[in-house]
Length: 392
Ligand code: NZQ
Ligand code: ZN
Picture 1 (cartoon, protein in one colour):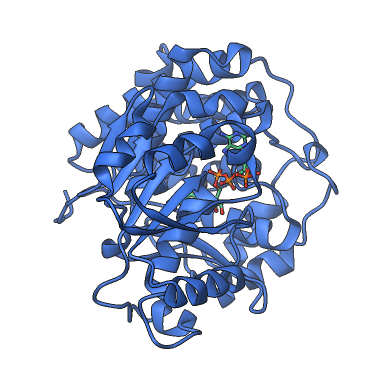
Picture 2 (cartoon, rainbow, N blue to C red):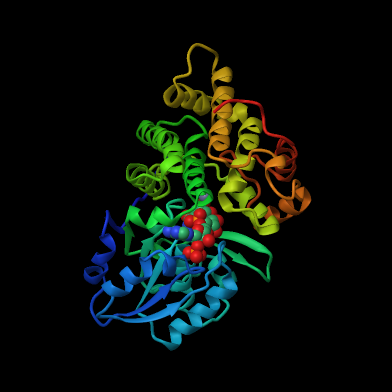
């Protein structure tokens, strides 16, 4: 096991009606900056619940955070937070709003109005503003992790930033907020969480049986409940996916584990260039990454086939290939793209994607740091033109 420090101080309030607990989590008279996205919270009753619970606070609103949030918008929000002397940033929304709020908390705590390069070097403020979250879309795990994935429009880059002090103080997870999510967002959430588990699990077989076993449970839960969520968006399905998505990327299953975020880094570049939803880039790329790295990942993929899918007799290589086919079939069952024919337009700019990853300073990728520019190019060129014929 790799040595690790693990501390996840985010206090989680999980359950129906939990938004009301904001009145206890946020002291009276706090100057709260409420950050939200394109307006879903004003249509589904979440905004009213938040405002009711914050009745004793003064609330400054900042709406209009984009999907795949823009740094340039966050700079505007930070300017307002400074003028208004905000004391707490409250994110109400999905991963984009949460990521923006966490980044904003640091941008608002420095004098510099353009700290992108400083943050890239790890020069964050010692005391970013505290952040709280009311999550409305389970997917990213952002509500209790230190990461913000931010797009700079002027730099043509979509990058992950990680700062431990950016972890939210609290996160409210009320499955009722998921009632207004459409099928595509529900699918995106399940697929994103599923890939988060796999990028921490499908690497090399180390002495990490606890992390592996928990990861296998998360995969099984998402496999079982993801399709039910799409089918009926039931209470049970919402609760299980909400909790699984949180656990998939809160640091626990990744502690002490060698990780491979290739699918995500390639996916971020595809989103920046083509505007494809985050989760849909992942389903497009993941099987190709795994097939290209099957030799290195064979042990864990074979274990996945046996533990998660009860693969019967067969070699490790057959089991590993079976697991990749099952992963692909799951994406298809969730309505997520696995081939170029599934996206529009039906092509991707391979050279520009490789260039994005290179400019982001992310090469080489992979748990063995052996996925360079040429390997990324080969992975992208191996994405099939049409979906494979297979049953879910
Ligand atoms: O903007 P609003 O109007 O709120 O609408 C959003 C948006 O259009 C809507 N939505 C959210 N909750 C809703 C709802 N619509 C109806 N009812 C609700 N309850 O859903 C749309 C997508 O929202 P978004 O926040 O973009 O989705 P998601 O949670 O999938 O977040 C994606 C972002 O997170 C980043 C991605 O790269 C992407 O930028 N990630 C962040 C990570 C992290 N911080 O650890 C890790 C991930 O791998 C990922 O990279
Ligand atoms: Zn993701």
